[in-house]
Image (cartoon, rainbow, N blue to C red; front, top):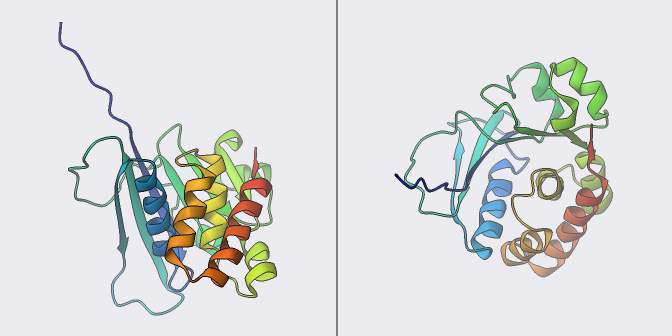
Length: 191
Protein backbone atom coordinates (compact mmCIF):
# COMPACT_ATOMS: atom_id res chain seq x y z
CA UNK A 1 0.00 0.00 0.00
CA UNK A 2 1.34 3.42 -0.98
CA UNK A 3 1.22 6.06 1.73
CA UNK A 4 -0.10 9.37 0.48
CA UNK A 5 1.06 12.45 2.29
CA UNK A 6 -1.37 15.36 2.32
CA UNK A 7 0.43 18.68 2.15
CA UNK A 8 -1.22 21.86 3.34
CA UNK A 9 -1.05 24.46 0.56
CA UNK A 10 -3.31 27.48 0.49
CA UNK A 11 -3.25 30.01 -2.33
CA UNK A 12 -4.55 33.56 -2.07
CA UNK A 13 -5.16 36.05 -4.87
CA UNK A 14 -5.43 39.75 -4.05
CA UNK A 15 -7.24 42.21 -6.34
CA UNK A 16 -6.65 45.91 -5.83
CA UNK A 17 -5.57 49.09 -7.51
CA UNK A 18 -2.09 50.55 -7.59
CA UNK A 19 -1.45 52.37 -4.31
CA UNK A 20 -3.98 50.44 -2.20
CA UNK A 21 -1.41 48.04 -0.82
CA UNK A 22 -2.42 44.67 -2.30
CA UNK A 23 1.20 43.57 -2.53
CA UNK A 24 1.92 44.82 0.98
CA UNK A 25 -1.07 42.80 2.23
CA UNK A 26 0.28 39.72 0.48
CA UNK A 27 3.70 40.29 2.02
CA UNK A 28 2.27 40.83 5.53
CA UNK A 29 0.23 37.63 5.28
CA UNK A 30 3.37 35.79 4.20
CA UNK A 31 5.36 37.24 7.14
CA UNK A 32 2.62 36.13 9.53
CA UNK A 33 2.75 32.61 8.09
CA UNK A 34 6.55 32.50 8.48
CA UNK A 35 6.09 33.28 12.18
CA UNK A 36 3.90 30.18 12.39
CA UNK A 37 6.60 28.00 10.82
CA UNK A 38 5.08 27.88 7.32
CA UNK A 39 6.75 28.17 3.94
CA UNK A 40 5.58 31.03 1.78
CA UNK A 41 5.63 32.84 -1.51
CA UNK A 42 4.43 36.40 -2.04
CA UNK A 43 4.61 38.21 -5.34
CA UNK A 44 2.83 40.93 -7.34
CA UNK A 45 1.61 40.95 -10.91
CA UNK A 46 1.77 44.31 -12.55
CA UNK A 47 3.56 46.04 -15.35
CA UNK A 48 4.17 49.73 -15.82
CA UNK A 49 0.71 50.54 -14.46
CA UNK A 50 0.01 53.86 -12.89
CA UNK A 51 -1.50 54.62 -9.52
CA UNK A 52 -5.11 53.41 -9.50
CA UNK A 53 -4.74 50.76 -12.22
CA UNK A 54 -5.87 47.20 -11.39
CA UNK A 55 -3.14 45.00 -9.89
CA UNK A 56 -2.95 41.48 -8.51
CA UNK A 57 -0.80 40.04 -5.77
CA UNK A 58 -0.45 36.43 -4.71
CA UNK A 59 0.39 34.51 -1.54
CA UNK A 60 1.11 30.83 -1.10
CA UNK A 61 1.28 29.24 2.35
CA UNK A 62 2.40 25.65 2.92
CA UNK A 63 3.71 23.21 5.51
CA UNK A 64 6.39 22.15 3.02
CA UNK A 65 8.81 23.86 0.68
CA UNK A 66 6.89 25.35 -2.26
CA UNK A 67 8.25 24.31 -5.63
CA UNK A 68 5.63 26.06 -7.74
CA UNK A 69 6.81 29.19 -9.52
CA UNK A 70 3.81 30.52 -11.40
CA UNK A 71 0.75 32.70 -11.06
CA UNK A 72 -2.07 31.34 -8.93
CA UNK A 73 -4.85 30.13 -11.21
CA UNK A 74 -7.11 28.28 -8.73
CA UNK A 75 -6.98 30.20 -5.43
CA UNK A 76 -8.47 29.03 -2.16
CA UNK A 77 -9.09 32.64 -1.14
CA UNK A 78 -9.72 35.82 -3.14
CA UNK A 79 -9.50 39.25 -1.52
CA UNK A 80 -10.94 42.30 -3.29
CA UNK A 81 -9.58 45.57 -1.89
CA UNK A 82 -11.56 47.81 -4.25
CA UNK A 83 -15.24 46.97 -4.88
CA UNK A 84 -15.25 48.87 -8.21
CA UNK A 85 -13.18 46.00 -9.61
CA UNK A 86 -16.25 43.74 -9.35
CA UNK A 87 -17.60 45.45 -12.49
CA UNK A 88 -14.45 45.11 -14.59
CA UNK A 89 -12.36 42.18 -13.30
CA UNK A 90 -13.56 38.54 -13.10
CA UNK A 91 -12.49 38.24 -9.45
CA UNK A 92 -14.05 34.81 -8.89
CA UNK A 93 -12.37 33.28 -11.95
CA UNK A 94 -10.66 30.04 -10.96
CA UNK A 95 -11.70 30.29 -7.30
CA UNK A 96 -12.00 26.76 -5.94
CA UNK A 97 -15.52 25.42 -5.44
CA UNK A 98 -15.14 25.63 -1.65
CA UNK A 99 -13.11 28.85 -1.84
CA UNK A 100 -13.58 31.98 0.25
CA UNK A 101 -14.25 35.42 -1.21
CA UNK A 102 -13.59 38.51 0.97
CA UNK A 103 -14.71 41.87 -0.42
CA UNK A 104 -14.24 45.43 0.81
CA UNK A 105 -17.78 46.81 0.58
CA UNK A 106 -20.65 48.23 2.60
CA UNK A 107 -22.98 45.67 1.01
CA UNK A 108 -23.97 42.50 2.84
CA UNK A 109 -22.85 39.04 1.75
CA UNK A 110 -26.45 38.25 0.75
CA UNK A 111 -26.63 41.29 -1.54
CA UNK A 112 -23.34 40.47 -3.25
CA UNK A 113 -24.01 36.73 -3.47
CA UNK A 114 -26.95 37.44 -5.80
CA UNK A 115 -25.00 39.97 -7.84
CA UNK A 116 -21.96 37.71 -8.25
CA UNK A 117 -23.86 34.41 -8.38
CA UNK A 118 -21.66 33.15 -5.56
CA UNK A 119 -22.60 31.04 -2.49
CA UNK A 120 -23.28 33.47 0.33
CA UNK A 121 -21.88 31.11 2.99
CA UNK A 122 -18.44 31.47 1.36
CA UNK A 123 -18.70 35.23 0.89
CA UNK A 124 -17.45 37.68 3.51
CA UNK A 125 -17.74 41.46 3.44
CA UNK A 126 -16.03 44.21 5.39
CA UNK A 127 -16.23 47.97 5.07
CA UNK A 128 -12.44 48.20 5.00
CA UNK A 129 -12.40 51.68 3.46
CA UNK A 130 -14.53 53.12 6.26
CA UNK A 131 -12.32 51.55 8.92
CA UNK A 132 -9.11 52.76 7.25
CA UNK A 133 -10.37 56.32 6.78
CA UNK A 134 -11.61 56.48 10.36
CA UNK A 135 -8.34 55.25 11.89
CA UNK A 136 -5.67 56.26 9.35
CA UNK A 137 -7.38 59.16 7.66
CA UNK A 138 -6.66 57.49 4.29
CA UNK A 139 -8.47 54.84 2.21
CA UNK A 140 -5.65 52.29 2.35
CA UNK A 141 -7.53 49.04 2.91
CA UNK A 142 -4.82 46.40 2.98
CA UNK A 143 -4.50 45.85 6.74
CA UNK A 144 -8.27 45.83 7.19
CA UNK A 145 -8.48 43.13 4.55
CA UNK A 146 -5.80 41.16 6.41
CA UNK A 147 -7.90 41.23 9.56
CA UNK A 148 -10.98 40.11 7.62
CA UNK A 149 -9.07 37.27 5.94
CA UNK A 150 -7.63 36.12 9.27
CA UNK A 151 -11.17 35.43 10.42
CA UNK A 152 -12.80 34.35 7.15
CA UNK A 153 -10.13 31.95 5.89
CA UNK A 154 -8.27 31.05 9.10
CA UNK A 155 -4.92 30.97 7.30
CA UNK A 156 -2.91 32.46 10.17
CA UNK A 157 -3.70 33.80 13.61
CA UNK A 158 -4.64 37.38 14.39
CA UNK A 159 -1.63 37.51 16.70
CA UNK A 160 0.77 36.59 13.89
CA UNK A 161 -0.69 39.26 11.60
CA UNK A 162 -0.26 41.89 14.31
CA UNK A 163 3.36 40.80 14.79
CA UNK A 164 3.99 41.08 11.04
CA UNK A 165 2.49 44.59 11.04
CA UNK A 166 4.72 45.57 13.98
CA UNK A 167 7.80 44.34 12.12
CA UNK A 168 6.90 46.10 8.86
CA UNK A 169 5.88 49.61 9.97
CA UNK A 170 7.25 52.30 12.28
CA UNK A 171 5.68 52.07 15.75
CA UNK A 172 3.05 54.81 15.42
CA UNK A 173 1.84 53.56 12.05
CA UNK A 174 2.01 49.94 13.23
CA UNK A 175 -0.20 50.70 16.24
CA UNK A 176 -2.92 52.24 14.06
CA UNK A 177 -2.70 49.38 11.57
CA UNK A 178 -2.94 46.78 14.34
CA UNK A 179 -6.11 48.56 15.50
CA UNK A 180 -7.45 48.33 11.93
CA UNK A 181 -6.59 44.62 11.71
CA UNK A 182 -8.37 43.80 14.95
CA UNK A 183 -11.42 45.89 14.16
CA UNK A 184 -11.79 44.29 10.72
CA UNK A 185 -11.35 40.83 12.26
CA UNK A 186 -14.27 41.58 14.59
CA UNK A 187 -16.51 43.33 12.03
CA UNK A 188 -16.20 41.09 8.93
CA UNK A 189 -19.56 39.51 8.04
CA UNK A 190 -20.35 36.20 6.42
CA UNK A 191 -23.46 35.02 4.62
